[in-house]
Each structure stands twice: as C-alpha cells, then as structure tokens.
Amino acid sequence: MNARCSWAVAALALVVAAATIRASALHVPNPQIAPLLAERKPDMEHGKYVAVLGDCAACHTVAGGQPFAGGNPFSTPAGTVYSTNITPDRDSGIGNYSFEDFVRVMRLGVTPDGTRLYPAMPYTAYAKVSDEDLQDLFAYLQSGVVPAHEPHQPSPIAWPLGIRWPLALWNLAFQDDSRFVADGSKDEQWNRGAYLVQGLGHCGTCHTPRGVAFEEVDVAGKSDLYLSGTQFDGTSPINLRGNPGDGLGRWSASDIAELLRSGRNPHSAVTGPMADVVRDSTQYMTDLDAAAIATYLKSLSPAPEDHRATFAANDATIHTIMAGDEQSAGGHIYMDSCAACHRLSGSGERLAFPTLAGNSSVLNSDPTSLIAVILDGARLPSTAAAPSGLAMPPFGWRYDDADIAEVATFVRANWGNAAPPVTGAEVAKVRKQRSD
Image 1 (spheres, rainbow, N blue to C red):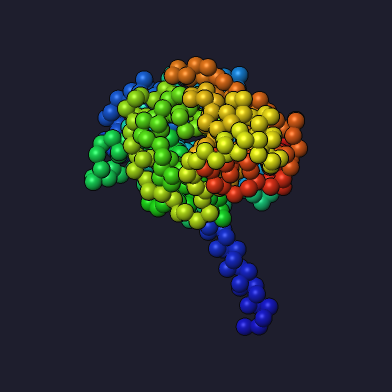
Image 2 (image 1 turned 90 degrees about the horizontal axis):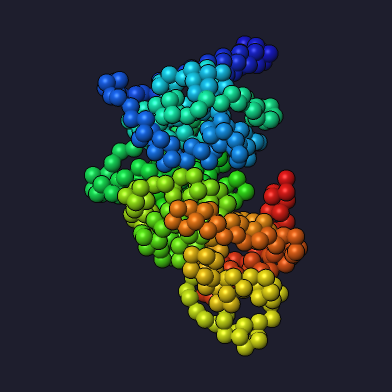
C-alpha cells in the first residue's frame, strides 16, 4: 500500500470513528427510573419543598420576572448560557415533558430531543436525587406553577464550543449518574445532610474545585477536595470543610444552621450568590434539614493545608491602632472607611456587621469575593430569622485598585488573620469582571 492509500485509509477510519462517536452522543439515554414508582402517587406539596431545597428559583427566575420562567445569564468558560423556562408552558417550557423526559434532564443533562446541556445546569448533583423526590418535584412544576410563555434565549457561544453533542463525551469522562447511597455506619441525620448537600443542595457546584475540563474534581464527598473552595462565576466560594482558618473548623453545627436560616452568624455573613441561596432556599428549610446539613458539614475533615490561611486571635492590632502607631496605607483606609461598622478590633457587631477577625471569606486563599464586596458593597438577605437587610456601601468609586489592595491586605493580616496579601492587579481583574 502506497503512502497516499495509507493516508486515505487513516482519514476514512477517523471519519468513521467520528461518525460513530457522534451517533452514540446523539443517542437519547435511559434515565433509569425504578419500575415501582409508577404505582406511587406524587406529593405536589412535598414537590414544592423539593424545589426550595434544590434552589430552582435562583437560577430559573429573573429578578422581577415570572417564577421559573428562566432567562438568567450564567458565565462559563465556554461563554454565557441562559437558564431555561421550567414552567408548564407547552411551547416554551416543560409542559410537553413526560416524567421520563424530566428525569433525563435532571440526571443526565439531556433534553427530549437529545440536546445536551452544559454542566452549568447541576445535573451532576441532581443525579443523586431520589426517584420519589424527582416525581414530587415534577408534579409541582407541572401543576403548581403558573405557565409562562418565555422562549429560551440562545447562548451566544461561538463554534466549536457551541456544538452540544461532544458534551456526551464529557459526561462519559466525568459524570457519575448513580443515586445517593446511605452510609450504614452513619446515623439518619448525617445521611440526610449528605443527601441534601451532595444532591438537591448541589453545594459542590460552587464550593468544589474544578478540573481542566471544568469538571468538579469530586461530586460525592470521597476526597478532602470536596467542598474545599474554588473560584466560580466571578466569586470565590469558601472552603466548607474543617480547616480552622479558611474553613468551618471553628464553627459549631448550630453556627452553620444559623447561617443557613438567617444569612449570618457570629463568624460571618453571606454575600454574592450565597445571599441568593439563603433568600430563596435555605431560610425555608425545616429545622431538621438545616441541622442535618450542619451535622454533615461538621463531619468533614480539613482540606489539604497547602497555602491555606490561618487564624489565631490576638489583640496586637487594636493596641497598635490605639497607640497611634498604625502606619500602613491599608490601616489608614480601614480606620477611615471600615472601622465604624467593623470596629477597630475587627469584631464587627453580632449579627449586624460581620466580624473580620477569623472570617472564612476574609481568609479565603482566593480573595475574589472579598475584593468584590469592597468594590461593590453587599446586602444581607432579609430572612424570617433576620428581617433587616443591612447593607455595606461600595467603595470602588472612592478608592483605586492599589488602595483596595491595601485595605484588603490589611484585613487579611490583622487581629490574628494570616492570609496572603492582595495585589493591585488582582483588584483590577475583579473590577473589570464586575464592569463587563
């Protein structure tokens, strides 16, 4: 066989292989529903609560828009994607879905026509959700939600990333679509918490590091990287594991439950996307479910300590300030613009102005969220447990990138905080992201 024939054969083989892979990718997979479920009557009221636990409103309801009509934009490495309409509208929503169609989307990220969803939709977590909870959720979305005619907004993602069928290969490589299995060595409360965190709460979607293909490095809590913090959608969600510095090691289970129910506790307060989670989801959890999540999170071992910040409370900072010896630019900015609320001691005011000393968000190895709060300000969610939606004003208009870096560095290095300094370049990057 001459060289030309060899190349022709090789090219033909590649074409056949590509066609085979594409044909396999276009196959609509079976969502694997237990046969006995057909005999069960769905509980629509429980389905409404499942929608709360899954925080469906946060992604599928635009501010001021009709509930669950979609249209929220989400930034991904491939480009911007928009949430879909999940009301029972037959033309633009899921009114024509069968239960099997719904489960396939929830667990595998595949629509009835075979279109693959980007994993911005957390089907990687919803795969853990039980048949019964999905059946109840589907009943609620079909019968308890007002239909809205809101056609899906196409994602402006350029070729070739806009091609969807290769996502089947992503699923093949990274998707674990198995159901949650209770750990027999743990009690019922722990298992309930694990089920909610790994499944409906999809906490790993924001709090677990991503790999080179944007995959969560652990979706089932099998390693100490699970929930160890990452950068996601222009924020830096904190480490939820047992580290005493940037994690929850110094929090009690009741501290965690309090944050879920009110958005604040003696150690910290929610900002950014987590404020939306508290407002739309966790404040409505039952006390038992909030306690179960807290029990599970408190059981997690510390994340690897490499490059992680530490905290050891001391009063050297307040003594330096009171003696008039604080000379840093960041310290001067802090005293001028921050101390009135957060106090010279960095202790804040319980459940009103967050403490900065030992605050997990302040100590985060990635300062993105801290920088964003200083630039843009923040507002605590108004909840039943804490109705006052207190706010921090923005300072991006007042201070340049170098100034913001100085004050961020100051709060990360005082009152016992020991986190790396922030640079002006990091601030400039966040400022640009927030303005785009």
